[in-house]
Image (tube, helix red, strand yellow):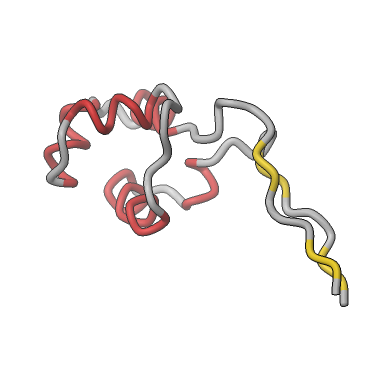
Length: 83
């Protein structure tokens, strides 16, 4: 069985900052809604680190977007999975 893992090739993995601007929301607002530190949201927005999948789901609901709109598809690709 051959499995190629999702490859992350560049730094700009998520589009959280872009979507926040599109929705006219701030990092501070998102942090308050999620109950986390504004510095944590800032790190996500600069792609210094990534939120958990659970947090991506919460963010997508808060911003009323699909999860895939929060991800930069250019840098995340699902490779071949074969048996």
